[in-house]
Image (tube, rainbow, N blue to C red; front, side):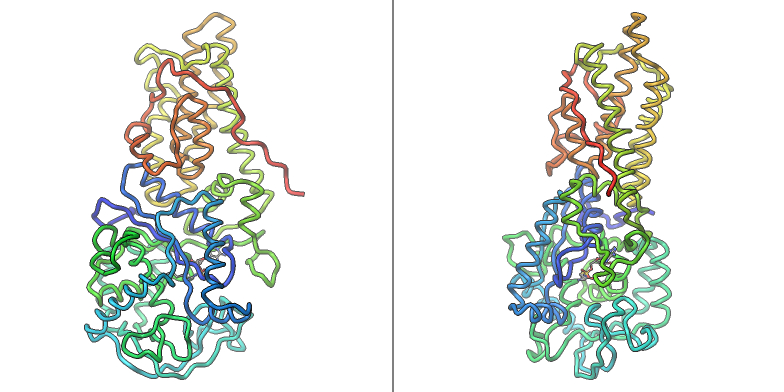
Length: 530
Ligand code: MSP
């Protein structure tokens, strides 16, 4: 599986645009962390990157939530959107665009896009009858529903019967073009299981879908009939295009397409695959616009093995988690623990155990004890070695030499847990190396050259580990680089220039004689939850 089949130098990545019916939950945090990691990885490699996230604010669900709170929809949205921005800051999400569907410039883009599709003859008026799930903002087939007409995704909220005049998008016209797309670009939908789901759905025959609503004020008025508003999904997907505009640019489709479109990757949860992998490419085809490179549908999170839900009282509050454990810990757990693409679980005991084992013990202690020895035995400097003093088949160096390409392949295919595992395996091997080689004994025996070789090899491995994990744990990587005597900030946008991938991913980068800083524990052991 490869990423970015779009042949362009820029890399634009999107998260879903989250509904503002409530504060962000751990599911939204999960996708956004993953997108941030991918964006950081591409920045590290020196690509121009645009990371887009934002909020989806129109539609019945939001209008009702605002009404229930006795607020105007706009002030409700402003308040919740600010909560999303706050969480992204706490989680150290470095997004380039935080876009909202209520932004006035978005309205302009939606109108222009609608016009294009209208001129194609792909929009017509018809009668919509069916069961509507307001929580999904989607019509459901009768056969999809549970007993008592309940939506399988929102069983506590009955679906509502609708029988109204709507405008429809001619999705059926794009059946064969979509099938061709899936065939020509097998990576367009990933992972494979999701691709198969979509292929099977499309093979049953595509139905046109309604793109307007009546009796709903909270939305963008339909350009050809102002008694309708545009269906929230039609509006929201287009927000990805609006986000591609520079902030001060005039909002036209031409401008939006100029620099960052098409997006290379839409990262989403598996429940909204159909919108992104079927409706969206067809809409773009109709407007004669380039298609995104890939749609990746990740799995769902559960808590202690159970589906999360407000009624079950087991939702994980991401604000609480990050305030108790800090951003790097939260980021690391979700990406290391869960194979991206599959469903995964959050369990606090496991959370604490993994972080203690990997970050406090394996990585943190390794740095700490090696640095202490370098202070003591090497006059607090990186040892100066004769060229080729460490043979290429040294048990640790040989692992370090290939690690960069292993890990970048893993990031490139969104296999985050594989990336972490590969790095941690080398970190664990370093701990064993130091125990086996016992530099303290060598020192006592006056074997200074051996001491220096061992310490250099281990310090260099820790450096490489920090570099390769920096998209996931940038703050810890900063501390490690800083203690090793570098002045590098992995939170900088131009990190790919400040510490170029091509250079830092190699082995033997730690400059001889570089002054080392004081050893400080980088990650305090966490107490098991009570
Ligand atoms: N507004 C739409 C997206 C429009 S994109 C143009 C939407 N919003 S959402 O807030 O309901 O969902 C956002 C994302 O959160 C979805 O990708 C969904 O899959 C994800 N998750 C919701 N609950 C989740 C878990 N329990 N676990 C993982 N992700 C989950 O849909």
